[in-house]
Length: 135
Image (cartoon, rainbow, N blue to C red; front, side, top):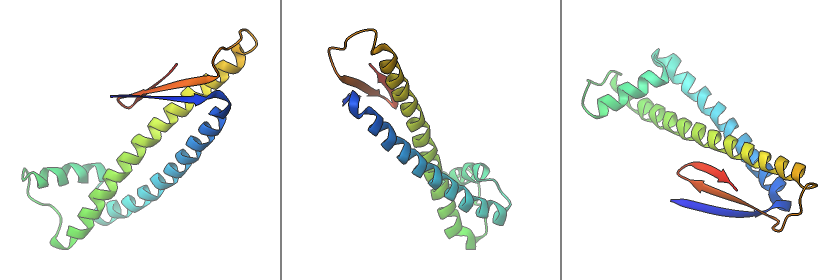
């Protein structure tokens, strides 16, 4: 699947600013999730990554459940928060890459502006399978 977005070059700085704002928001969410996960790690003396592996094995009935019965609600919340944290980190990574590519495009356009006349005032951004390509 491929998506192509054409952006007016004059509006590119505003798009970058909007993406940076979203990235900042995601980074705050990441920190909040990390704090919550840390509470579970301290309570159960187990890292989140180890917990997730054991939880997934237990759900597939490959290992016996390892936490006490009163931890059921905690374990569901812990697992859900760990998954959400992973998603947020992936989104942040993607946004960082996209912002950097757009900034490079903006910088390149600014430096070549005096060298040639542009026929088209648009930047094309093509997104394919979680990667972006800027033409």
